[in-house]
Image 1 (cartoon, rainbow, N blue to C red):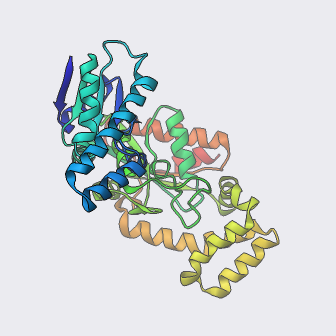
Image 2: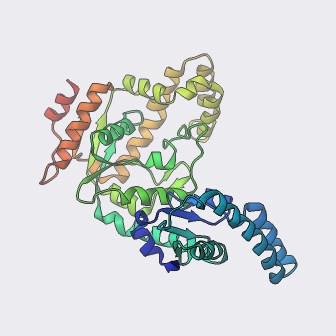
Amino acid sequence: MGTRLVSADDALARLASFDTIIDARSPGEFAIDRIPGAVNWPSLDDAERALVGTEYKQVSAFDARKRGAALVARNIARHIEREVFDKPRDWKPLVYCWRGGQRSGALSTVLGQIGFQVAMLDGGYREYRRAVLAELDQRMPNFDFRVVCGTTGSGKSRLLGELARQGRQVLDLEALAEHRGSVLGLVPGHPQPSQKAFDSRLWFALRGLDPARPVFVESESKKIGDVRVPETLIARMRDAPCVLLNLDVDARVALLLEDYAFFVADTGAFCERLNALRPLRGNATIDAWQDAARVGQHAEVVRALLVEHYDPIYLQSMRRNFRGVAEPWLRIDWRGDAASLAATAARIGEAAERPGPAVAATPTASAALSS
């Protein structure tokens, strides 16, 4: 037994072979991003890391290493006592830190000396990050994306959820980004992941998809809240066949009031979000919408947001950026209820799995799903 170095490409290709993925970086570094499924056994916590760094700059590297060694030794002892006593002899961990240096090296050495078969990530998190970005670019051309298009509130996210429940492959970018993709899209109490964490989530999600089967994805813009979708994915989506989802405006308002019920319950937060639209809609319009919301006219405000703001912007963006919108692969009219949603998802899923060329949109298909 002992410690062996593994490259990032090798480690990522067989992540499932490791019993535990151990991130030896500080909790702050771990919070920004980590290998999916990793647990945090910090060799130095945030305060200790800052202390050692200060001593390195202000005193000497030698004194900083002595202090760091004492802190690391105590922390590793605590991890061993809390986490390792119940591990069997054949337990196989993967250990990494920022660049594959002393923090992961110290922990790997101790675990290896105990008798475990330890893999240490050569180059650490930096090499993992490089490999993830490279693999994201390499994987995108392999997938058969089908883009779900439709105006705000037409049920695109609900359709993706129903497609997933029916066993179809779905890439839910808004779920990965923890944002619903509009000014109102940030869910209270759910901060967005960092850009690096979003990239890791996307990479991990793509690893679970079969390139031989269609993948359904929503027609997102280049940014979802504060995170940016990789250009390679944006390019593939914009060239992909489109499913055009239609729902009448009354049903769209009802769906949005359900999906954003937290704003109905907290009118103050809703009005605060509307302030972001002042540069586009003007103070008079936003003031009027806020006044209406404060007296409980949420449905009226949502309708105005759709008709006056979101619909014109969305339709212009779709025509400019998504080639498949002009001649949709399927055009679906649905009613907004659960039965119609299930029927819509089944129709789309069956059409996508059918071998041969893309199925043309027909009035018959649309009418059958809305009848």
